[in-house]
Length: 197
Image (tube, rainbow, N blue to C red; front, side, top):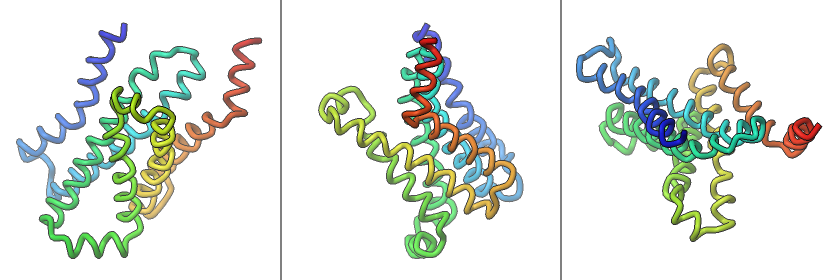
């Protein structure tokens, strides 16, 4: 089953990239192309972060281990879209001019927290393979618990950018709170007890 699903999910994860590449190539991004690319890559970064955070709760609730097989891929796609989001900001927005970027980081809290989220994703991406898991042993799990903080930072980045928690930011906030709550020991205990009874 996983031999069929994994390549399919990989291709589906590439769809947002294909859409934005098509829109760039055929000039379909409207009057503010950089803004469109920034929003598109940013939203998909957040979605993939939440999807990767959803895999363990789904495993706990359904008692199906296959969810965990997709967690690494989804996390790496979150890093991929996060890197595109960052490169769009520093490359297209500011043409790699460091002075205004540093000024933004120091004075705009949504930029600061967004950059912090990407920096936290970096060690997770580097240590995501099986070899690093064997080398780091117990420390691997500690490093990858940063994903909770990344989720919080990513949602805060979106809320502060939107300057409101209504509609879309509120939906992401509710999803994040639900996913983090499902990781609490008492919730895991209740699901375990329910499956036994």
